[in-house]
Image (cartoon, rainbow, N blue to C red; front, side):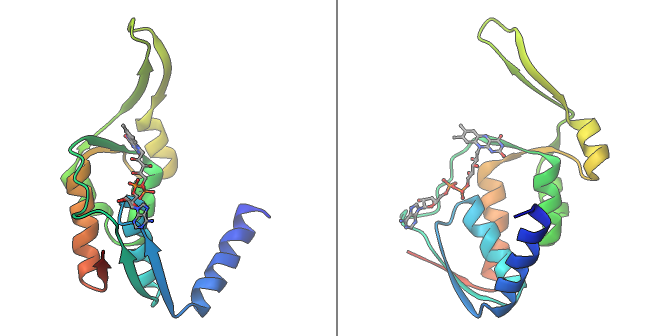
Length: 138
Ligand SMILES: Cc1cc2nc3c(=O)[nH]c(=O)nc-3n(C[C@H](O)[C@H](O)[C@H](O)COP(=O)(O)OP(=O)(O)OC[C@H]3O[C@@H](n4cnc5c(N)ncnc54)[C@H](O)[C@@H]3O)c2cc1C
């Protein structure tokens, strides 16, 4: 099935859906729960950890992630939380460049910037958005 056909099928399924449970309150689960809630689906997120994990590391959010966050109205908030990133490089331990990507060019193509954001801050922003609608349960 093509990506476009899959997307149409997913939208049809969501339109018929009344209630959903999301297992896992990580970045993926919280984002999915916000999107489902905005589509009118009643959502409960179940998280097995005591508290939500606050791994204090930076996360590079590429243009496609920011574009997805803009669909749920959170791009501006996340862009304010982060710092812009113009270039992505993977290097060997000797410092030799293994791969390089201009995130500026990607941003121009996709129509959204890339940012580095504190993982815990991103998760908190998602949680805040979700608190407006639903519940996160253990
Ligand atoms: C070191 C490292 C660096 C990374 N850097 C980047 C980066 O710069 N940019 C980027 O885009 N991505 C990065 N990633 C990838 C990114 O972290 C993951 O893609 C993202 O966190 C996945 O989100 P998730 O919600 O699917 O999973 P997770 O964040 O793993 O969350 C899953 C959640 O589900 C819960 N759970 C699991 N099983 C159950 C169950 N049975 N019942 C209830 N709860 C359950 C867990 O407790 C957890 O809270 C990095 C990953 C690592 C490890």
